[in-house]
Amino acid sequence: MRRLFPVTDQTSASPLDPADRADREWSLDELAEAYAYPELAADGHWLRANMVSTLDGAAQHDGRSQPISGETDMRIFGTLRALADVVVVGAETVRQEGYRPARAREAFAARRAASGQGPAPAIAVVTASLDLDFSLPLFTSPLVPTLVVTGAAAPADRVAEAVGAGAEVVVAGEGAGADPARAVRELAARGLRRQLTEGGPRLLGQFVAADALDELCLTISPMLAAGGAQRIAGGPSVTVPHRLAPACVLEEAGFLFTSYRRI
Image (tube, rainbow, N blue to C red; front, side, top):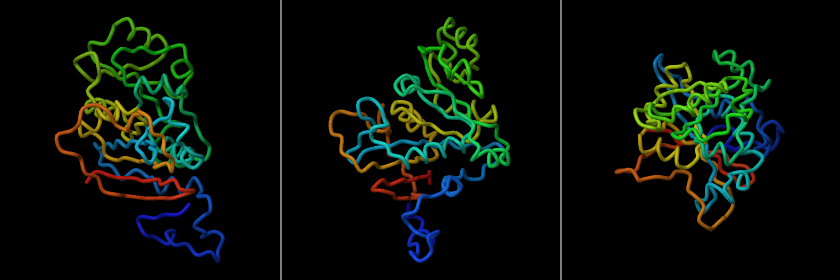
């Protein structure tokens, strides 16, 4: 892997020292440093998204992101999870991708402890209908209780079933569904301030429309998919496109691993 931006000693590494080779595999510690959350104020929070897209803009192939991903992309995926307090995901993505509870990883245990974090991030599922299988391990046997983020008018029987399965219900809206900006605030109020969303595209589009997204970590896959696959963000367009600034660009095997932050 090599760093293309910002320019550092890793950008044009010397081939004389194997430790400085640009094409070597980065350690998990190096990835964690590259993707560290910014310092937050006492009442602050930070929502980043992690998505993958082909060169022609497809965020999925046959309904899943795995076919357009790669080994290093999955290492970064795991690193971003290991740095987060909570992983926020839409119900359709939970169903499509077969979500399981986040696991504790020994490689990040000391870093999480030093940051005052628990052994693994919580998973927060954003849903209006609560059309979820509450018998799955995501709800019955997580290391950290799974959160269900919904609205005050969500179906009462489904809310009761979620609570009965061991999930914590977070009300973040007055209607059936959650308000994206309020969802971010409600999670932060529970101490879950380092937030990561893995989509899907509809949920990410809602965060973008609400101007609640602070950072986008986008893997650009060196593939072409064609077809009618979704983009990384869906839903209605914003009145004025939101501009972000590049924070980091890494490259390996033709994949570009980018990070853009709000200005």
